[in-house]
Each structure stands twice: as structure tokens, then as C-alpha cells.
Length: 167
Image (cartoon, rainbow, N blue to C red; front, side, top):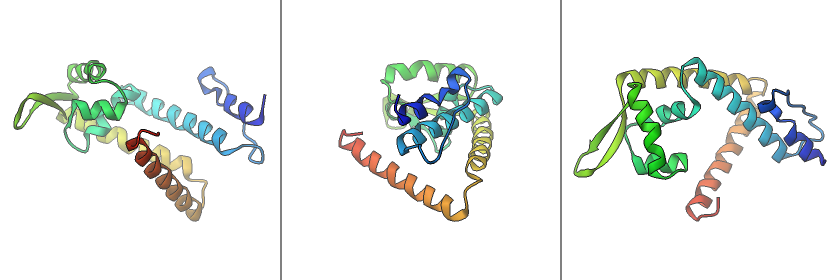
């Protein structure tokens, strides 16, 4: 197995294994995979503490910015609108979100947070933010800024490529 393969395999968090790292041998792809694993594990732990699934937590955080139409939410999740219906149904049953009519379009609905959903989203978001801040706390301020800048560049390019159907 290649060094990259070993580093990627070392993300065996799903198998309960601790990732192994050797900074001198880890390439960028393996590092991103390991970082993704760390972030996803943390996100899942925080979701569980808030009695949410990671997908429900993502929905609530998206809705913090305001109501969203089903088609827009489907794009956020990368699924068809029909697949989003179950997620929305479960959020409604728990009293976290509700479907409301879109003003000026009788056929369309949007998903809105309830008061309970807003409180849950704010609490979850605050704890995730704290945990993510801890994750990068070993970095110097300059390294944090460089990391933030590099992430912003990657995200911007990927969004542009996505619009072109490339990402």
C-alpha cells in the first residue's frame, strides 16, 4: 500500500481505530481525508448531544439563515426534492421545522424553523463552533489565517466549478 493509501486507511475512525499521522509522509489528499474524518466525528458527537442526527443538524443550521424552498434544500443536500421530504417530515414531527406556503406561489412550499428549531439550531451551532475552534487552536494566528484563506480559495473555486458542472 502507498503512503497515501496508508494515511487514508488510517482514517479508520469508523472502525474505531485511531488515525496515525507522520507529517513528513502525509500528502495533502490524505491530510484532507483525515481532517474530514475528524470533523465528521466531532459533528456527529455534537449532534448526538443535541438529540439530532447530523443531517437534521445540517438542516437546522441551513434554516438559521431563513426559510428555504424544497428545491434549494435539495441542492444543499445533493438529493432530489422527493428524498428531502422524509427529512422535512421528521423535522416537522419533532416540532423543529414547518412547511409554509411561498408568498405569491400557491404550489410551492418553504421550510422554516419553529421557535424550538431555532433554539436547537443556535445551541448546536454554538457548540460546533466551539469544537471546531478547539480543533484549530494549536495553530498560530498566522497559520489560522493562512488555513482560513486557503479554505476560502478552495471553496470559492469548487463552487465556481460546480456551476460549470465540474465539481
